[in-house]
Image (tube, rainbow, N blue to C red):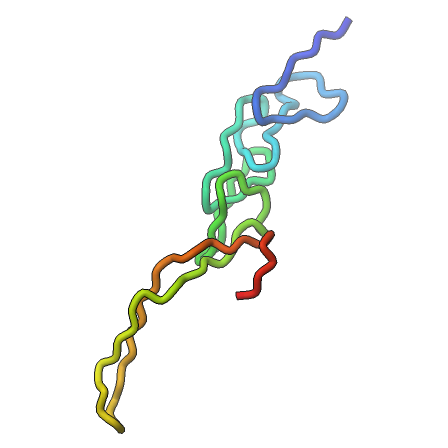
Length: 112
C-alpha cells in the first residue's frame, strides 16, 4: 500500500507525485520545492515555484499576484499646481505635485 503525504500549505503536486519535493508553490506564492511557500509580496508577481519577480518601474501589484498582467500603472491625482510668473509674454514655469490616488488593476479594464 502506498502512503500519501500531504503537500505543505500553499503548494500543489501533479498527479502521480511520489515525494514531498514534488510539491511546488501554487500561483501567487513562492518558495523552495517541498517546503512551505510565502505569499507573493506587493509590487511583485509569482507564477508559482521558486521565482518572485519584480513589477516594472512605475507599476504596482497587490500581494498574491500571479502574473505580470497584475502589475499596473499607478494612478495619481493632482495635489497642487503653481506657476512662477503671471506676467504676459514672460517665461513661465509650471510646477505640478502629484499624489497617489488609487491603484488601477488590469482586471478593472480601465483606460488611463
